[in-house]
Image (cartoon, rainbow, N blue to C red; front, side, top):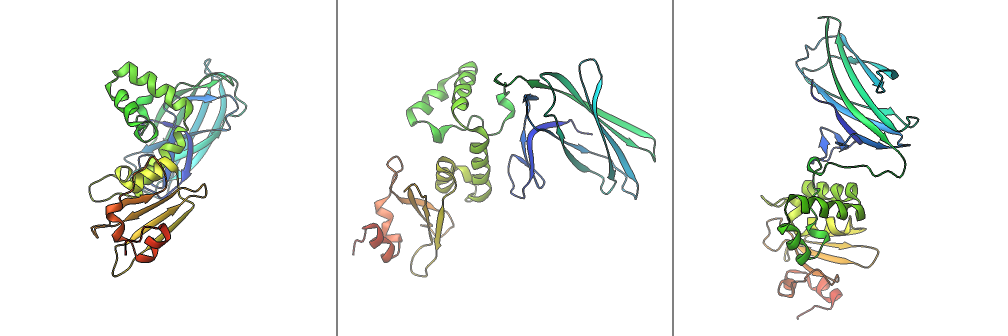
Length: 282
């Protein structure tokens, strides 16, 4: 049996990425701290060396306080279908008062009379009390390059461990970690070009910085290179072109001041598109 992974969210999602396990998107909570009033605590774990048959495993989930008093017990029957199985569950903790608790998972196989169990501590924090997050356990936690200036990022890279920790703490107090991590994960899954990670490509960078576009125009022509036109309803626009014909898209035009256009590559666009942009050289 694996260790228990606590999470703030587990949802079905077939997109591959660092926050997914199988078909589940998991937002981990490695600190084990939940704010008072949080509706559900989620957990994920894996069972190994199962002998598949028509019988069932009996799994008990026990939530106890510091005196070992059982506050909640949930029992499930799980079919023994595979030699290795991943299990997850959401447990309502909305009524739990601030304090320290323990979650125990007990797995019993009646056929071989074998019991295994694992436990993990968690805590409920008072409303308004800051919940500490151990940064080293969170994917993309130090991936801040797209959200600070070049000069600021160079400064961040010169910091030692404690300096980085404090810098990142302040950064994430002002930014939505879950949303940015989701963008990184999507970019890595959908915009990879050859050996280059999706988050390092032009499309990946724009997606991470500005979020999903409101409209995408994807065109292919025999006499011109394929291109993608991304439009955001706030007025931001981007055009990416597969300049080499290798499905590697380069940002060649944008109306966003801090992103660079590449006028030397405008000829790769169809004439009508250049005219729309006022960039027709003919």
